[in-house]
Amino acid sequence: GHFQASRGNVEQHLRERESRKMGDRAERLLRAHQKIDEDQAYAQMRKMAMNSNQKITAVATGVIAILDKNPAESVHESF
Image 1: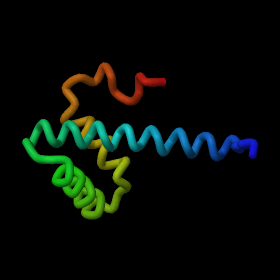
Image 2: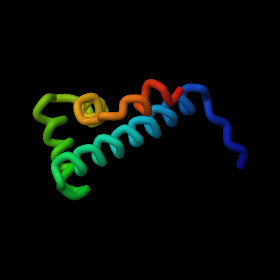
Image 3: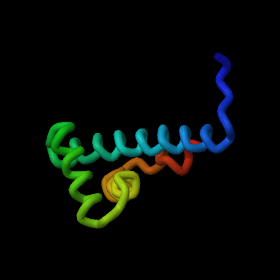
């Protein structure tokens, strides 16, 4: 069948992809910073999200803001 995405769907999809990218990035930063593995990094972000009552995306943004020493390639400039 032909694929017809409404504008809303497309934007939602882009947002999801964007937040997944941010999650991955935050995870990598955590792992490098704390010398932990993927599962631990993810568990830590989930705990932070629950404790602060935020979405993982918000936590990821915070982690990136704090740990990323190379803001030139931050999310803001990828548009």
